[in-house]
Each structure stands twice: as C-alpha cells, then as structure tokens.
Image (cartoon, rainbow, N blue to C red; front, side, top):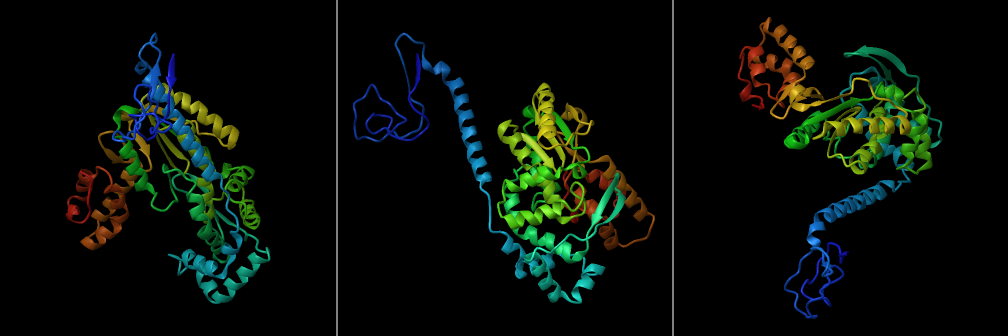
Length: 416
C-alpha cells in the first residue's frame, strides 16, 4: 500500500510536532530544532510493500496536472471578473478630446479632419450630448474594394463623429480587453506586432525536439463570418456596464460581420478568438502556439498529435464560434518546407523573407537602380523593405539586389 503524507510545503522535516502539514515523522521524537527546512513529499509504506519511490515519477505527473488545473482555474476566475461603470468615462468631454487627438494622427490634411476643425470644440460637446442622450447613430459606410493581394471589401466611416467615438471607446476598453489576451496573441496590440511574433516563433524553434512538426491554419473569410450574437456574448463575459454594452451592440450591428476598416473591428476580431486561445493553452496544454489575427501555427514533436488537434480545433470553431477553417490547412515537417507565417519563412536554422515580399522588394530596387538617385533618397524609398529584411537572414539578398550601392551594414543592423 502506498500513501501520500502531504503536498509541497515548507517546514521542519526532522520532527513531527513542528513540521507542519507536509511532513510526518514516524521515526523521530518531536524537537524544537528547525535546521532542516525544506519542501518535499512525505511518504511511508508498509513493510510488505515495494519501495514507494518507484511510484514517485507517475505521482509527480499527477501533481503537475493538478497544479496546472489550479492555475487555469485561478486565471479563469480572474478573467470572469466583469467590469462596470465605464460609460461615463467613455463619453466624458476629456476622453472625447483625447480620442480626437489620437484619431487625427497622420490624417491632418484629410477632408474629415479639416472640416471637423472648423468647429472642433462645438463638435466635441455635441458628440458628448449625443452619447449621453443615446441619440448617436453610426453614419453610413462608404464601401469599396481593394486587391492586396486578394479582393476585400473595405468599410470607411466619416472622421466625425464615428472615428472619434471608436477611439473614445478604445481609450477605456483597450487595457480591459488586452488583459484577456494570452501572451501568444499578436496583431493590433501594442508591442505585439509582426516582429514580436517573429521573435516568439524563433525562440520556440530553439526547442528543436518539440517543434519538429507544424500545423498551420487560418479561418475562412474571418471578418465577414464573425457572428454578432456570439461576439456580443463574448463582450459580456468581461463587461457588465449596461450603457456601454448598448453602445457596443449598436456598433456591432452597424454592418455585416465585422467590417474591415473600422478601428474597433481589429479588437473585436482579436476578442472573438481570445477564449479559444485560452482553451488551446490551458485546457489542451499546447506549449508552442502563435496567433496573428486569424492565422495560427502550432508546433509539436508528434505529427499524429497535430492531426488529432486539428479535429478538436475544427470542432471548437464550428460549434462554439460558428466559423470554419480554410481547406488549405497543413501539417508538415518544419525543416522540410519551412513555416510561412507573418511574412517570413521559418526554419530551425534560419529565417528568410516570404517569396512574395522578396519579389516586391526586388522590383522596387530594380526601379531605383534604373534611376540616378542620391543615397539619401535610395534609403528613404527602401526604408519599409529594410524594416522587413533586417529581422531575418537577408544580408546577401540585399547586397546582391542593391549592387552594393552603399554600405547597409553601417546603417541597418542585419541578421547574419
């Protein structure tokens, strides 16, 4: 018979009276000596039983699972705490003025900002009253298509009042919603952009044994497919302010799905999958998982495990979120094909630019090479491309296509 005396804790392991609940000493008499303070599991066994240490390894796994369950439960309880009394903060004149400042960044010469500035203070006061009296209604959308590289419908709202309202909401809601996201969620979150995601993937790939295979998936027509009723339920898991919920519901229902182009849409899209992220990390215990918007990659040592995981994920997304995966899902060896994710192709040994980005980079350089331009202009035109290239193994590519027109190593820190 095998018995568990206690669980991890501190105390005096040399005597029973002073040891605390984790220690049981059947051999020594109580004493006041506390010279051996440590944390361990106390076991005893009957004389006719085999040594208990043979079972410690399996029992340790059980304890690890118990601790993980406790952490999950604690984190879940923290996430479930709902926040109220937000509406007055959102509609305050001070918050609307701050929203106006943020919404106009990079758009000072746009028609909407120029028109708004003709009567700026009065407009802010009027918007405050509209929100307070609940007479605010989302303006009509201007819808147009882009092809970058595939066709998308873009929804655009006027600067006043709508873009200011969206920024006013996010001034208050952003820290609340960001607190829900796991550390492996990227896109449209401060300090968690493409390059933060890239560093996370590179760090994971250092564990070669447990990242031999990759599952890569993304959601079919994600933004247009987001279910309004489910999104509203997800919003209510964290927010209990009735007036704020009424305003958010109105914005959610202002267009089909979640319209690409709205400032709020990028947060709604991240929020829609936030509890899926927790399910992946905490319920399934997936160690290496990264999500950028609706693009997801999973790493594991076992290819069959990833195929089984795909079935579970498909069931969760279909039945709980009413969205579906594209049929181009892939399970493959990382070193054979490389992981095409967030504009880069990752392998255990190196990282390269995605083929499409590399082609566009080369075209831009070819156009410049045909012109007589100064070094300063050369740098300025290629600045955005260098922002991509400097984070991967692209030094040879840059030297080749630019024909060494100037010393990049003295201007840009490149990965060797």
